[in-house]
Image 1 (cartoon, rainbow, N blue to C red):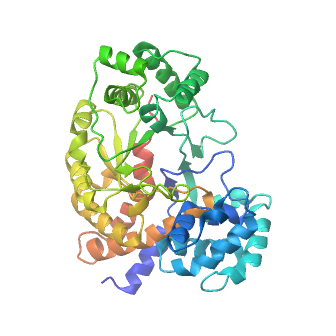
Image 2 (image 1 turned 180 degrees about the vertical axis):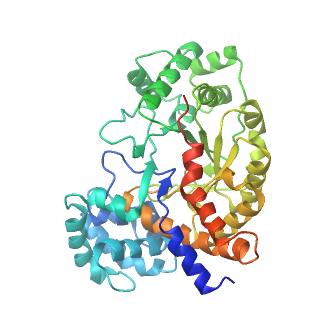
Length: 421
């Protein structure tokens, strides 16, 4: 166990490191909360409250937002043991002047009214950037996003491609692609040209990554031009030649345009069909990164930041980062984003893979207010792991440990997601 003095010193120094948040869902044109409903409406709170017994009626769009927050606050004490609860408490304390222990229904009026005042004050967005010590944050942008209305030097665009790969059979997706690119074709040559225009648009707006989330059974393979052409025009849901052809096409453009291809592996959609919005998806352990060996081997110049949902798969990810020059262990995603799993995963990665192959953390936040509490959680874990595993055994000096933290929180992401000519 690290000494309290060492931990305090490391935490103090690590807290001064500016953050590069390499994956979020923050909307560029409206990045901050406007009400308490934007905070308590985060899917973690709605799904945890629902799993604890809360009926879903308060989550209907027609429900009064202030009353929805009052209802959720009534269920919040049942979540007090969770990491997500600690994020909310920190937001209340840091930004809303809350001095209690556990916010509950009795605090509803105070928190609602204070949030209205604080979140809508002039300059709140800039003040939040300063409080968070944030340098840049990566977004998740639909392929037809015009990428306007925000500063793309701070809010970094990222081309999200799930719809293109897995829902191309839907007429509305093909219509969106035609409208975004001006190319209304569904043959292989036409689709290649359209996707190329998407990459050009995103790169012109400062994009630094292409990203996709993938199911556990997905194993990408190249497809012949003729088979890809037939699959595109048949427009059958789940056609493997269509899915593989589109995915492989994205990897080729990432290669050609020197863009990292951010893979989030292992999510099953709509497992809990009656779940709340965004509270339906889970993972299982059928997936293996060996399914991606052909991809990693065929595209040696493409950098693949990889996130996994299954904590048991972390050793496999660390080992791939150990062996493959183009595989990066990227953050702690979704169900792995809790202290117990982060601590174990971070220890394994730091002991197995070169430090430069690790991006320590990303927020996955939907509003900027969540970046600070999430990174505070990670910083505390990072200080403890560095102290116990590297400094106290004598493998690193304190100065070296702080330099390692700088890489994990800032420098590595800047290098991995840098712009290429």
